[in-house]
Image (tube, rainbow, N blue to C red):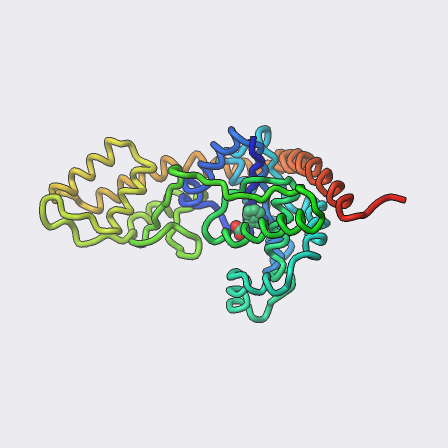
Length: 329
Ligand code: TRP
């Protein structure tokens, strides 16, 4: 069985793109593997959240993942900062990470450009902390998006370097966990590209009905098909893709046929799509709110997750200390 680890950014709410692109696959993943999911709150300090924001975002991210089906009985679900062992491994790994290679990572170079007044050392060593997250459980698989591939490659490099340096075969080289054909790309509502936070084209699981309706009714379309079986433009294709995710096959076929015979009215399509998205999102939203309000439950989950994670993490740190040469007198 693989040990799979996934780090979750502590800021940002889940949108349908995250749900169909990642979370749904996590649910399957947790059935088949020894899974660790954690909320990366240490990492978020590189951008200086206020104490209130830090706490509240961790809480709402945790509630969202629980509401969508991550199961604390099947997986270790924890908050990064509850597992202090990670910081020790981070320190140790820092000793064999080179400043030059860290400076050359694209994410660091991006940050230097976008936040020139706050180029802190935490940003530089972000990939080392991420490697510590992964290696602390000696994980062999990590699901990552395109933007995190380089960080995963760094984790592999540090694992390999550690093994080589101490002539051991201790850390596995963590490989990307591939969702394969289950990798769904969810389009946004702005006519092109993926649904994303930065693009501002998303529907969030906590969006209220009215907001969903408004967003969908405003989605980009085109001037309509001009002849029988006209080719479908990207904005319309995107609406069909969304419909395919939330509506019944009959509904999708109905509108596709209308399109093919040039009888489609985009207003009707959007109305139906909004309705079906609302039907899909509402129970999840209710669940999120309920969990968010249940501090007792959140505390219990976080505690249980931390215990599982600390058990595995402290074992690793103990063994690593021994390999490095820290010994008791
Ligand atoms: N850097 C990841 C992101 O921004 C979050 C993350 C932190 C992570 N540590 C990790 C992801 C370890 C995978 C493994 O999305």
